Length: 235
Image (cartoon, rainbow, N blue to C red; front, side, top):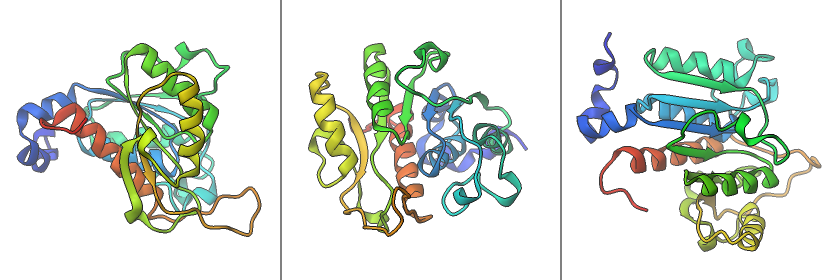
């Protein structure tokens, strides 16, 4: 089976010229959990030519309800390596790099920016790391889109795409707005939900459903594909 046949239906939709833009693109995904794993899945199935997967975690049995690479057979294995093999099953011609580290503000950034990225997807959980990544990408002139909170929510229809300074309700976005303003950041595209997080009984444990973080991840991927490969994208 040729790669042409693999992506035939997408090419019908967006055209050969736009598909070639996707196949030439390099996208880094920071955080390969419930949101990030579905972003990677959609980008791989959209023919992105070079994917860089960044996450330190191994698959845990509690991931099975919401992470696409989490199966009984993959528990205990590196998330980035499991997903790397999955990408090759989708597109053997793809180039995939993995970095089994958490992106943290005190880590040398060169450990993570291993090549020229056309786009960065922020699917990190830690707010300090998210802010640091945004600042680093904007310093380097790299396009970035960030996922806000997807935990303790049940309604996937309430996700929206907006500049972070136009968001409402989302607690993660609220904190980030304040911090980014202090750093002089003027804009940041985000995927956020206007659903209020539900109160859960378990302290410090975030509840999740299969159909919420996955939708956020797919929306992130859609925005990346629109900007990299489809004419007439929204800014």
